Image 1 (spheres, rainbow, N blue to C red):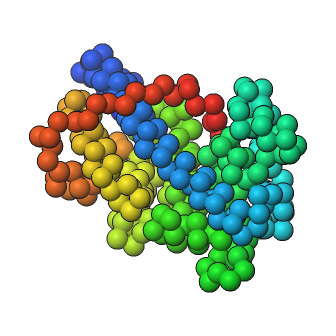
Image 2: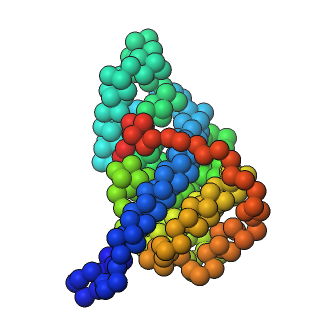
Length: 273
């Protein structure tokens, strides 16, 4: 714990210091939730697009497309639960397709699929799976939309799914060991570790390719958030002293006013997995 020393609360610890960390952590989780949401939607969309293009709307019902049959079965059980939940909630696209066809095409199934399920299915695609007439494997075609190779995207989605679930369950993100570590590019290997800073590097690499302008806005929001809690140390999260330079904040015009903050309650998202 940040305020623990030799099994007791460190001398001089103030309630204000503890509360500052609590509030910082809460706001940081909201920031992370917002950024990961965009990654989740793009991953599900690309997964549905590429597989539907190559193997039709019922691609999910073809176990031969996946490597591990046990993992595939588990993922499909999750998909079934998610579809049933969406049906009970009266989701229009789900009810329409079930009433008319008795099942969901892949592009509709991903609408109810959790990030964890989508990540598991993507990670389980056969490594030699290729669409006829295409040079790259299916996994590589999906990863190309993110500007990286499949091993990186598989690792990043697994990691961000874990972080997303921490945020969704309102668990503490600050100063914790992360069991699922993202794969670091060669230029980023010095930041590898089981603390939180690699999460920010991972988001930077995704956003600089997919949403560079939004990344600049979010960096300014992050800088504003951190500056609002000067008593909270970033060292327990693995941040280096030059973290602002590493993330590119030093190159931003931080005097430019922030866009109106986008509010969203985490409880509005029904899929946590």
